Amino acid sequence: METEESILQFAPLQSFVSPSFWHKLTEIKTDFDRLNDEPKPICGYYSPREAKSCILEVDCTAFNSNFKEPKFCFKAHGTIYNKNTLENFKETDKTSLLQQEGLKLLEEFRTDIILEDPSRLARFFILSFAVSNYDVSRLNYCFADNAFLIFQDLKNYNYYYWFGFPSPLTSTLKLVDPVVKLRDIPEKESLMQEAFAMGGVECAGNFFILSVNEENKNCFALKEFVNKFKSLPESAVKDFYFCFADNSEYLEPSWVMRVYVAFLLYKCPFLLQQKLQFVGVRYDQDMNWNESQIWQVRQSIEADDYLKEFNNENVKFVGWELNRNRKLQPRMASMKESMDPTILAENSVNLNLKLMKWRLLPDLNLNILATTKCLLFGAGTLGCAVARMLLGWGFKHITFVDSGKVRFSNPVRQYLYTHQDACKENIMKSTIAAERVKEINPSVNSSGYVLNIPMPGHPIGERLKEQTIKDLSKLKDLAQQHDAFFLLTDSRESRWLPTLLGAAYQKIVINAALGFDSYLVQRHGSAKHVEKIGDTATEIQIDNLRCIKGEDLGCYFCNDVTAPGNVS
Figure 1 (spheres, rainbow, N blue to C red):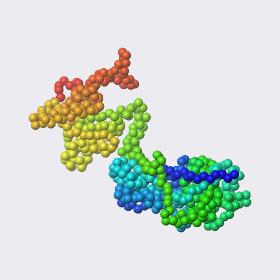
Figure 2: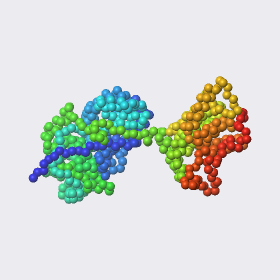
Figure 3: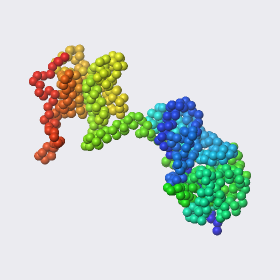
Protein backbone atom coordinates (compact mmCIF):
# COMPACT_ATOMS: atom_id res chain seq x y z
CA MET A 1 0.00 0.00 0.00
CA GLU A 2 1.49 3.32 -1.06
CA THR A 3 1.79 6.13 1.45
CA GLU A 4 -0.16 9.26 0.59
CA GLU A 5 2.26 11.96 -0.51
CA SER A 6 2.30 15.29 1.32
CA ILE A 7 3.99 18.60 0.60
CA LEU A 8 7.43 18.96 2.20
CA GLN A 9 7.73 22.07 4.36
CA PHE A 10 11.04 23.80 5.13
CA ALA A 11 12.15 25.42 8.37
CA PRO A 12 12.90 29.09 7.57
CA LEU A 13 16.32 30.44 8.43
CA GLN A 14 16.48 32.77 11.42
CA SER A 15 19.07 35.50 11.58
CA PHE A 16 21.20 35.94 14.67
CA VAL A 17 23.27 39.11 14.68
CA SER A 18 26.21 39.21 17.08
CA PRO A 19 26.75 42.58 18.81
CA SER A 20 30.21 42.67 17.25
CA PHE A 21 28.56 42.93 13.81
CA TRP A 22 26.94 46.26 14.76
CA HIS A 23 30.24 47.54 16.15
CA LYS A 24 32.01 46.70 12.90
CA LEU A 25 29.23 48.05 10.69
CA THR A 26 29.30 51.37 12.54
CA GLU A 27 33.09 51.56 12.28
CA ILE A 28 33.10 50.83 8.53
CA LYS A 29 30.30 53.29 7.79
CA THR A 30 31.77 56.19 9.77
CA ASP A 31 35.48 55.65 9.02
CA PHE A 32 35.59 54.13 5.54
CA ASP A 33 32.36 53.99 3.52
CA ARG A 34 31.00 57.40 4.48
CA LEU A 35 28.95 58.36 1.39
CA ASN A 36 29.77 55.21 -0.55
CA ASP A 37 26.58 53.14 -0.83
CA GLU A 38 27.79 50.39 -3.16
CA PRO A 39 26.70 46.88 -2.09
CA LYS A 40 29.35 44.91 -0.24
CA PRO A 41 29.86 41.16 -0.04
CA ILE A 42 29.68 39.76 3.47
CA CYS A 43 29.67 36.27 4.95
CA GLY A 44 27.82 34.44 7.68
CA TYR A 45 27.82 30.92 9.02
CA TYR A 46 25.55 28.20 10.37
CA SER A 47 26.19 24.99 12.26
CA PRO A 48 24.58 21.53 12.11
CA ARG A 49 26.14 20.66 15.48
CA GLU A 50 23.49 20.59 18.20
CA ALA A 51 21.51 23.05 16.10
CA LYS A 52 18.93 25.26 17.78
CA SER A 53 16.08 26.76 15.76
CA CYS A 54 17.48 27.26 12.27
CA ILE A 55 20.04 29.97 12.87
CA LEU A 56 22.31 31.76 10.43
CA GLU A 57 24.73 34.04 12.26
CA VAL A 58 26.78 37.09 11.32
CA ASP A 59 29.46 38.75 13.44
CA CYS A 60 32.33 41.22 13.04
CA THR A 61 34.23 38.82 10.77
CA ALA A 62 31.42 39.05 8.18
CA PHE A 63 33.28 41.89 6.43
CA ASN A 64 36.63 40.05 6.19
CA SER A 65 37.86 39.44 2.65
CA ASN A 66 39.43 36.16 3.80
CA PHE A 67 36.48 35.05 5.90
CA LYS A 68 36.98 31.86 7.90
CA GLU A 69 33.95 30.27 9.51
CA PRO A 70 34.23 29.01 13.13
CA LYS A 71 34.92 25.37 13.89
CA PHE A 72 32.00 23.00 13.20
CA CYS A 73 30.31 25.71 11.12
CA PHE A 74 29.69 26.22 7.41
CA LYS A 75 29.98 29.36 5.35
CA ALA A 76 27.05 31.35 3.95
CA HIS A 77 27.42 34.10 1.34
CA GLY A 78 25.63 37.41 1.59
CA THR A 79 25.44 41.02 0.42
CA ILE A 80 24.75 44.18 2.38
CA TYR A 81 23.14 47.21 0.72
CA ASN A 82 23.77 50.38 2.69
CA LYS A 83 21.88 53.48 1.49
CA ASN A 84 22.95 57.01 2.39
CA THR A 85 19.70 58.93 2.32
CA LEU A 86 16.14 58.36 3.38
CA GLU A 87 15.00 59.07 -0.18
CA ASN A 88 17.24 56.37 -1.67
CA PHE A 89 16.13 54.00 1.02
CA LYS A 90 12.43 54.63 0.37
CA GLU A 91 12.91 54.25 -3.38
CA THR A 92 14.25 50.72 -2.92
CA ASP A 93 11.52 48.23 -3.81
CA LYS A 94 11.54 45.03 -1.75
CA THR A 95 10.17 42.88 -4.56
CA SER A 96 12.77 44.11 -7.04
CA LEU A 97 15.60 43.62 -4.57
CA LEU A 98 14.55 40.04 -3.77
CA GLN A 99 14.20 39.40 -7.50
CA GLN A 100 17.65 40.89 -8.14
CA GLU A 101 19.29 38.72 -5.50
CA GLY A 102 17.40 35.66 -6.72
CA LEU A 103 18.52 36.21 -10.32
CA LYS A 104 22.12 36.47 -9.13
CA LEU A 105 21.69 33.06 -7.51
CA LEU A 106 20.09 31.68 -10.67
CA GLU A 107 22.95 33.01 -12.79
CA GLU A 108 25.37 31.05 -10.61
CA PHE A 109 23.22 27.98 -11.24
CA ARG A 110 23.77 28.44 -14.98
CA THR A 111 27.47 29.39 -14.97
CA ASP A 112 28.58 26.54 -12.69
CA ILE A 113 30.05 28.93 -10.11
CA ILE A 114 28.24 26.89 -7.47
CA LEU A 115 29.90 23.69 -8.68
CA GLU A 116 33.25 25.31 -7.91
CA ASP A 117 32.05 26.53 -4.50
CA PRO A 118 28.90 24.72 -3.27
CA SER A 119 28.80 26.86 -0.12
CA ARG A 120 27.29 29.60 -2.31
CA LEU A 121 23.97 27.74 -2.15
CA ALA A 122 23.59 29.16 1.38
CA ARG A 123 22.62 32.76 0.56
CA PHE A 124 21.34 35.85 2.34
CA PHE A 125 21.27 39.62 1.91
CA ILE A 126 20.59 42.72 4.00
CA LEU A 127 19.31 46.12 2.94
CA SER A 128 20.50 48.86 5.30
CA PHE A 129 20.08 52.55 5.92
CA ALA A 130 22.58 54.25 8.23
CA VAL A 131 21.93 57.71 9.66
CA SER A 132 23.56 59.71 12.45
CA ASN A 133 20.40 61.34 13.77
CA TYR A 134 16.93 60.17 12.87
CA ASP A 135 13.43 60.65 14.14
CA VAL A 136 12.15 57.19 15.04
CA SER A 137 8.56 58.43 14.74
CA ARG A 138 9.09 58.52 10.96
CA LEU A 139 9.98 54.83 10.92
CA ASN A 140 6.41 53.64 10.29
CA TYR A 141 6.23 55.93 7.27
CA CYS A 142 9.22 54.12 5.81
CA PHE A 143 7.69 50.70 6.44
CA ALA A 144 4.47 51.74 4.77
CA ASP A 145 6.50 52.02 1.57
CA ASN A 146 7.55 48.37 1.97
CA ALA A 147 11.20 49.21 2.54
CA PHE A 148 13.23 46.46 4.18
CA LEU A 149 16.29 47.56 6.03
CA ILE A 150 18.82 47.77 8.72
CA PHE A 151 18.01 51.16 10.19
CA GLN A 152 21.05 52.37 12.06
CA ASP A 153 20.27 55.09 14.63
CA LEU A 154 23.82 55.99 15.62
CA LYS A 155 22.64 58.52 18.19
CA ASN A 156 20.64 56.01 20.23
CA TYR A 157 22.52 52.89 19.07
CA ASN A 158 19.32 51.20 17.86
CA TYR A 159 19.45 49.01 14.76
CA TYR A 160 16.40 47.97 12.78
CA TYR A 161 17.25 45.21 10.35
CA TRP A 162 15.75 42.79 7.85
CA PHE A 163 17.26 39.67 6.30
CA GLY A 164 16.37 37.98 3.03
CA PHE A 165 17.19 34.37 2.09
CA PRO A 166 16.41 34.10 -1.65
CA SER A 167 15.13 30.84 -3.14
CA PRO A 168 13.38 30.22 -6.47
CA LEU A 169 9.65 29.58 -6.20
CA THR A 170 9.41 26.19 -7.92
CA SER A 171 6.76 23.50 -7.98
CA THR A 172 6.12 21.89 -4.62
CA LEU A 173 8.22 18.97 -3.46
CA LYS A 174 6.29 15.91 -2.28
CA LEU A 175 7.25 13.85 0.77
CA VAL A 176 6.87 10.23 -0.35
CA ASP A 177 7.54 8.37 2.92
CA PRO A 178 7.64 9.37 6.59
CA VAL A 179 10.82 10.98 7.85
CA VAL A 180 13.29 8.55 9.44
CA LYS A 181 16.38 9.07 11.54
CA LEU A 182 19.66 7.51 10.56
CA ARG A 183 19.89 5.59 13.84
CA ASP A 184 16.60 3.86 13.01
CA ILE A 185 18.16 2.13 9.99
CA PRO A 186 21.41 0.73 11.46
CA GLU A 187 22.26 -1.35 8.39
CA LYS A 188 22.31 1.77 6.22
CA GLU A 189 23.94 3.88 8.91
CA SER A 190 27.06 1.71 9.08
CA LEU A 191 27.45 1.70 5.29
CA MET A 192 27.00 5.47 5.09
CA GLN A 193 29.49 5.99 7.91
CA GLU A 194 32.05 3.96 5.96
CA ALA A 195 31.40 5.93 2.77
CA PHE A 196 31.59 9.19 4.70
CA ALA A 197 34.92 8.18 6.26
CA MET A 198 36.30 7.25 2.84
CA GLY A 199 35.15 10.53 1.31
CA GLY A 200 37.68 12.77 3.03
CA VAL A 201 37.63 16.30 1.60
CA GLU A 202 34.57 15.59 -0.56
CA CYS A 203 32.46 14.98 2.55
CA ALA A 204 33.82 17.95 4.49
CA GLY A 205 31.69 20.62 2.80
CA ASN A 206 28.11 21.83 3.15
CA PHE A 207 26.88 19.54 0.36
CA PHE A 208 27.95 16.09 -0.83
CA ILE A 209 26.46 12.86 -2.20
CA LEU A 210 26.90 9.33 -0.86
CA SER A 211 26.46 6.22 -3.00
CA VAL A 212 25.92 3.21 -0.76
CA ASN A 213 25.19 -0.47 -1.39
CA GLU A 214 26.72 -3.78 -0.35
CA GLU A 215 29.31 -3.71 -3.14
CA ASN A 216 30.26 -0.03 -3.37
CA LYS A 217 30.60 2.86 -1.00
CA ASN A 218 31.46 6.23 -2.54
CA CYS A 219 31.36 9.88 -1.59
CA PHE A 220 31.01 12.49 -4.35
CA ALA A 221 31.51 16.21 -4.25
CA LEU A 222 28.68 18.12 -5.92
CA LYS A 223 30.79 18.96 -8.97
CA GLU A 224 31.92 15.37 -9.40
CA PHE A 225 28.38 14.01 -9.25
CA VAL A 226 26.96 16.54 -11.75
CA ASN A 227 29.78 15.99 -14.24
CA LYS A 228 29.87 12.20 -13.90
CA PHE A 229 26.20 11.27 -14.04
CA LYS A 230 24.07 12.37 -16.98
CA SER A 231 21.34 9.83 -16.31
CA LEU A 232 20.45 7.25 -13.68
CA PRO A 233 17.81 4.52 -13.68
CA GLU A 234 15.44 4.39 -10.74
CA SER A 235 17.11 1.21 -9.49
CA ALA A 236 20.41 3.08 -9.18
CA VAL A 237 18.99 6.32 -7.73
CA LYS A 238 17.83 4.48 -4.61
CA ASP A 239 21.49 3.97 -3.61
CA PHE A 240 22.25 7.71 -3.61
CA TYR A 241 21.89 9.96 -0.58
CA PHE A 242 22.03 13.69 -1.20
CA CYS A 243 23.55 15.11 1.97
CA PHE A 244 23.65 18.66 3.30
CA ALA A 245 24.61 20.30 6.58
CA ASP A 246 21.25 20.76 8.29
CA ASN A 247 21.02 23.51 10.92
CA SER A 248 17.39 22.74 11.74
CA GLU A 249 16.30 21.15 15.01
CA TYR A 250 12.79 20.48 13.72
CA LEU A 251 11.18 17.64 11.83
CA GLU A 252 11.34 19.87 8.75
CA PRO A 253 14.66 20.39 6.97
CA SER A 254 16.47 23.72 6.87
CA TRP A 255 15.64 26.31 4.20
CA VAL A 256 19.10 25.55 2.79
CA MET A 257 17.74 22.24 1.46
CA ARG A 258 15.18 24.11 -0.64
CA VAL A 259 17.93 25.85 -2.62
CA TYR A 260 19.96 22.62 -2.74
CA VAL A 261 17.05 20.68 -4.28
CA ALA A 262 16.36 23.43 -6.82
CA PHE A 263 19.99 23.40 -7.94
CA LEU A 264 20.26 19.61 -8.17
CA LEU A 265 17.11 19.25 -10.24
CA TYR A 266 18.18 22.13 -12.48
CA LYS A 267 21.61 20.59 -13.18
CA CYS A 268 20.37 16.98 -13.21
CA PRO A 269 16.84 16.98 -14.69
CA PHE A 270 16.97 13.18 -14.96
CA LEU A 271 16.31 13.16 -11.19
CA LEU A 272 12.87 14.66 -11.73
CA GLN A 273 9.92 12.35 -11.03
CA GLN A 274 12.27 9.96 -9.22
CA LYS A 275 12.23 9.13 -5.53
CA LEU A 276 15.21 10.94 -4.00
CA GLN A 277 16.73 10.56 -0.55
CA PHE A 278 18.00 13.73 1.12
CA VAL A 279 19.99 13.47 4.33
CA GLY A 280 20.03 16.41 6.71
CA VAL A 281 23.34 15.87 8.50
CA ARG A 282 22.94 16.79 12.17
CA TYR A 283 25.78 16.32 14.63
CA ASP A 284 25.62 15.89 18.39
CA GLN A 285 28.19 17.20 20.87
CA ASP A 286 30.56 14.33 20.04
CA MET A 287 30.16 14.88 16.28
CA ASN A 288 28.11 11.72 15.82
CA TRP A 289 25.53 12.06 13.07
CA ASN A 290 23.14 9.24 13.91
CA GLU A 291 20.44 11.86 14.69
CA SER A 292 20.50 12.94 11.05
CA GLN A 293 17.16 12.73 9.25
CA ILE A 294 16.28 11.30 5.85
CA TRP A 295 13.53 12.75 3.69
CA GLN A 296 12.36 10.70 0.70
CA VAL A 297 10.92 13.15 -1.78
CA ARG A 298 9.76 13.43 -5.38
CA GLN A 299 9.35 16.33 -7.77
CA SER A 300 6.50 15.24 -10.05
CA ILE A 301 6.84 17.89 -12.75
CA GLU A 302 8.17 17.03 -16.21
CA ALA A 303 11.77 17.99 -16.94
CA ASP A 304 10.88 20.41 -19.73
CA ASP A 305 8.29 22.17 -17.59
CA TYR A 306 10.70 22.39 -14.65
CA LEU A 307 13.44 23.98 -16.75
CA LYS A 308 10.92 26.42 -18.21
CA GLU A 309 10.26 27.69 -14.69
CA PHE A 310 13.92 28.71 -14.45
CA ASN A 311 14.23 30.08 -17.97
CA ASN A 312 11.11 32.19 -17.60
CA GLU A 313 11.97 35.87 -17.16
CA ASN A 314 9.14 36.11 -14.64
CA VAL A 315 10.53 33.46 -12.32
CA LYS A 316 9.57 34.34 -8.74
CA PHE A 317 11.64 34.20 -5.58
CA VAL A 318 10.75 33.97 -1.90
CA GLY A 319 12.74 34.34 1.29
CA TRP A 320 12.01 37.48 3.34
CA GLU A 321 12.48 36.79 7.04
CA LEU A 322 9.56 37.24 9.42
CA ASN A 323 10.10 39.02 12.71
CA ARG A 324 9.57 37.50 16.15
CA ASN A 325 5.85 38.19 15.91
CA ARG A 326 5.69 36.24 12.65
CA LYS A 327 5.05 39.40 10.64
CA LEU A 328 6.79 40.97 7.66
CA GLN A 329 8.32 43.70 9.77
CA PRO A 330 11.89 44.50 10.84
CA ARG A 331 13.68 43.43 13.96
CA MET A 332 15.37 45.84 16.33
CA ALA A 333 18.60 45.47 18.30
CA SER A 334 19.47 48.00 20.98
CA MET A 335 23.23 48.25 21.42
CA LYS A 336 23.28 51.16 23.83
CA GLU A 337 24.60 49.06 26.72
CA SER A 338 27.63 47.89 24.77
CA MET A 339 28.28 50.81 22.40
CA ASP A 340 27.36 54.03 24.20
CA PRO A 341 30.67 55.38 25.65
CA THR A 342 28.79 57.00 28.54
CA ILE A 343 27.31 53.70 29.66
CA LEU A 344 30.60 51.87 29.12
CA ALA A 345 32.39 54.42 31.32
CA GLU A 346 29.70 54.18 33.98
CA ASN A 347 29.91 50.38 34.07
CA SER A 348 33.70 50.54 34.43
CA VAL A 349 33.48 53.08 37.26
CA ASN A 350 30.85 50.99 39.05
CA LEU A 351 33.01 47.88 38.77
CA ASN A 352 35.98 49.72 40.28
CA LEU A 353 33.80 50.97 43.14
CA LYS A 354 32.57 47.46 43.87
CA LEU A 355 36.15 46.19 44.00
CA MET A 356 37.04 48.96 46.45
CA LYS A 357 34.00 48.10 48.53
CA TRP A 358 34.76 44.38 48.65
CA ARG A 359 38.37 44.96 49.70
CA LEU A 360 38.03 47.93 52.07
CA LEU A 361 34.45 48.73 53.11
CA PRO A 362 32.14 45.70 52.75
CA ASP A 363 29.23 47.51 54.43
CA LEU A 364 29.41 50.60 52.21
CA ASN A 365 26.12 51.36 50.42
CA LEU A 366 27.14 52.58 46.97
CA ASN A 367 23.54 53.40 46.03
CA ILE A 368 23.37 56.00 48.80
CA LEU A 369 26.55 57.65 47.51
CA ALA A 370 25.25 57.67 43.94
CA THR A 371 21.98 59.35 44.92
CA THR A 372 23.38 61.86 47.43
CA LYS A 373 23.25 65.43 46.10
CA CYS A 374 26.39 67.36 47.00
CA LEU A 375 26.59 71.16 47.13
CA LEU A 376 30.14 72.52 46.97
CA PHE A 377 30.64 76.08 48.22
CA GLY A 378 33.83 77.13 46.45
CA ALA A 379 35.37 75.89 43.21
CA GLY A 380 39.02 76.67 43.92
CA THR A 381 41.84 74.42 45.10
CA LEU A 382 39.66 72.62 47.65
CA GLY A 383 36.60 72.57 45.41
CA CYS A 384 38.47 70.93 42.53
CA ALA A 385 40.10 68.34 44.79
CA VAL A 386 36.87 67.43 46.60
CA ALA A 387 34.96 67.17 43.32
CA ARG A 388 37.49 64.69 41.96
CA MET A 389 37.35 62.66 45.18
CA LEU A 390 33.56 62.58 45.03
CA LEU A 391 33.74 61.31 41.45
CA GLY A 392 36.15 58.60 42.52
CA TRP A 393 33.69 57.34 45.14
CA GLY A 394 30.72 57.23 42.79
CA PHE A 395 28.82 60.42 43.63
CA LYS A 396 26.60 61.37 40.67
CA HIS A 397 25.14 64.75 41.73
CA ILE A 398 27.61 67.63 42.19
CA THR A 399 26.76 71.34 42.22
CA PHE A 400 29.30 74.19 42.42
CA VAL A 401 28.72 77.64 43.89
CA ASP A 402 31.42 80.25 43.24
CA SER A 403 31.67 83.81 41.95
CA GLY A 404 35.30 83.82 40.82
CA LYS A 405 36.92 83.67 37.40
CA VAL A 406 39.76 81.41 36.27
CA ARG A 407 43.07 83.27 36.72
CA PHE A 408 46.54 82.43 35.41
CA SER A 409 47.68 81.26 38.84
CA ASN A 410 44.80 78.79 39.19
CA PRO A 411 45.44 75.87 36.78
CA VAL A 412 48.63 74.66 38.50
CA ARG A 413 46.70 74.08 41.76
CA GLN A 414 43.09 73.82 40.65
CA TYR A 415 43.15 70.94 38.20
CA LEU A 416 39.69 71.27 36.73
CA TYR A 417 40.99 74.29 34.80
CA THR A 418 43.55 74.82 32.04
CA HIS A 419 45.77 77.63 30.83
CA GLN A 420 43.38 78.20 27.93
CA ASP A 421 40.56 78.87 30.40
CA ALA A 422 42.63 81.62 32.03
CA CYS A 423 43.46 83.15 28.64
CA LYS A 424 39.78 83.68 27.90
CA GLU A 425 39.56 85.99 30.98
CA ASN A 426 35.78 85.68 31.44
CA ILE A 427 35.54 81.98 32.28
CA MET A 428 33.65 81.51 35.56
CA LYS A 429 34.96 78.78 37.84
CA SER A 430 31.62 77.27 38.84
CA THR A 431 30.31 76.75 35.30
CA ILE A 432 33.55 75.46 33.78
CA ALA A 433 34.12 73.16 36.78
CA ALA A 434 30.68 71.61 36.21
CA GLU A 435 31.50 71.06 32.53
CA ARG A 436 34.86 69.46 33.34
CA VAL A 437 33.24 67.07 35.81
CA LYS A 438 30.88 65.92 33.05
CA GLU A 439 33.82 65.48 30.69
CA ILE A 440 35.48 63.22 33.25
CA ASN A 441 32.30 61.19 33.86
CA PRO A 442 29.43 61.95 31.44
CA SER A 443 26.90 60.13 33.62
CA VAL A 444 27.29 62.70 36.42
CA ASN A 445 24.60 65.34 36.88
CA SER A 446 26.70 68.47 37.45
CA SER A 447 25.85 72.16 37.39
CA GLY A 448 27.48 75.44 38.39
CA TYR A 449 26.05 78.70 39.75
CA VAL A 450 27.74 82.09 39.81
CA LEU A 451 26.58 83.45 43.17
CA ASN A 452 28.01 85.84 45.75
CA ILE A 453 27.73 84.50 49.29
CA PRO A 454 26.73 87.28 51.73
CA MET A 455 29.37 87.47 54.49
CA PRO A 456 29.54 89.05 57.97
CA GLY A 457 31.68 92.17 58.00
CA HIS A 458 31.16 92.82 54.31
CA PRO A 459 28.64 95.64 53.88
CA ILE A 460 26.26 95.54 50.92
CA GLY A 461 25.59 98.78 49.09
CA GLU A 462 22.28 99.78 47.57
CA ARG A 463 23.57 98.96 44.10
CA LEU A 464 24.17 95.30 45.05
CA LYS A 465 21.18 94.87 47.34
CA GLU A 466 18.76 93.54 44.72
CA GLN A 467 21.30 91.07 43.30
CA THR A 468 22.28 89.93 46.79
CA ILE A 469 18.64 89.19 47.64
CA LYS A 470 18.37 87.10 44.45
CA ASP A 471 21.60 85.24 45.27
CA LEU A 472 20.42 84.60 48.81
CA SER A 473 17.11 83.23 47.55
CA LYS A 474 18.92 80.92 45.13
CA LEU A 475 21.28 79.75 47.88
CA LYS A 476 18.29 78.84 50.05
CA ASP A 477 16.72 76.89 47.17
CA LEU A 478 19.97 75.01 46.50
CA ALA A 479 20.36 74.26 50.20
CA GLN A 480 16.94 72.63 50.34
CA GLN A 481 17.53 70.63 47.15
CA HIS A 482 20.83 69.06 48.27
CA ASP A 483 21.73 66.48 50.90
CA ALA A 484 25.31 67.37 51.83
CA PHE A 485 27.25 70.66 51.92
CA PHE A 486 31.00 71.01 51.50
CA LEU A 487 32.43 74.31 52.78
CA LEU A 488 35.48 74.91 50.59
CA THR A 489 35.73 78.68 50.28
CA ASP A 490 38.92 80.69 50.81
CA SER A 491 37.82 82.82 53.78
CA ARG A 492 36.40 82.18 57.22
CA GLU A 493 33.42 84.51 57.00
CA SER A 494 32.22 83.06 53.68
CA ARG A 495 31.47 79.81 55.56
CA TRP A 496 29.09 81.49 57.99
CA LEU A 497 25.93 81.55 55.87
CA PRO A 498 26.36 77.97 54.50
CA THR A 499 26.85 76.81 58.11
CA LEU A 500 23.57 78.45 59.13
CA LEU A 501 21.76 76.97 56.12
CA GLY A 502 23.07 73.51 56.96
CA ALA A 503 21.87 73.79 60.54
CA ALA A 504 18.51 75.28 59.54
CA TYR A 505 17.73 72.59 56.97
CA GLN A 506 19.44 69.78 58.93
CA LYS A 507 21.92 68.86 56.21
CA ILE A 508 25.24 67.03 56.41
CA VAL A 509 27.97 69.70 56.45
CA ILE A 510 31.65 68.92 55.83
CA ASN A 511 34.09 71.76 56.40
CA ALA A 512 37.61 71.73 54.94
CA ALA A 513 40.05 74.60 55.45
CA LEU A 514 43.69 75.10 54.48
CA GLY A 515 46.27 77.37 56.08
CA PHE A 516 49.92 77.90 55.19
CA ASP A 517 51.03 75.45 57.89
CA SER A 518 47.80 73.78 59.00
CA TYR A 519 44.54 72.29 57.81
CA LEU A 520 41.17 71.33 59.22
CA VAL A 521 38.58 68.78 58.11
CA GLN A 522 35.44 68.70 60.21
CA ARG A 523 31.91 67.36 60.07
CA HIS A 524 29.40 69.71 61.65
CA GLY A 525 26.93 68.47 64.22
CA SER A 526 23.33 67.80 63.32
CA ALA A 527 20.21 69.03 65.07
CA LYS A 528 18.58 65.68 64.30
CA HIS A 529 18.17 63.43 67.34
CA VAL A 530 18.96 59.73 67.08
CA GLU A 531 15.81 57.66 66.98
CA LYS A 532 15.36 55.52 70.05
CA ILE A 533 14.35 51.88 70.11
CA GLY A 534 12.67 51.38 73.45
CA ASP A 535 14.62 53.32 76.07
CA THR A 536 18.03 53.21 74.39
CA ALA A 537 19.42 55.16 71.47
CA THR A 538 21.06 53.21 68.64
CA GLU A 539 24.74 54.08 68.41
CA ILE A 540 27.53 52.96 66.10
CA GLN A 541 30.49 51.34 67.83
CA ILE A 542 33.88 51.14 66.09
CA ASP A 543 36.85 49.44 67.73
CA ASN A 544 39.55 51.76 69.12
CA LEU A 545 37.55 54.87 68.19
CA ARG A 546 35.50 57.20 70.30
CA CYS A 547 32.17 57.63 68.53
CA ILE A 548 30.36 60.88 69.25
CA LYS A 549 26.69 61.16 68.34
CA GLY A 550 25.86 63.64 65.59
CA GLU A 551 23.85 65.98 67.79
CA ASP A 552 26.82 66.32 70.15
CA LEU A 553 29.21 67.57 67.44
CA GLY A 554 29.95 71.26 67.12
CA CYS A 555 30.54 73.39 64.03
CA TYR A 556 33.32 75.53 62.62
CA PHE A 557 32.27 78.55 64.68
CA CYS A 558 31.32 76.90 68.01
CA ASN A 559 34.45 77.97 69.93
CA ASP A 560 34.55 81.51 68.57
CA VAL A 561 34.39 84.27 71.18
CA THR A 562 33.72 86.90 68.53
CA ALA A 563 31.53 86.90 65.45
CA PRO A 564 33.31 86.29 62.12
CA GLY A 565 34.35 89.44 60.32
CA ASN A 566 36.20 90.72 57.28
CA VAL A 567 39.70 89.22 57.35
CA SER A 568 40.77 90.45 53.93
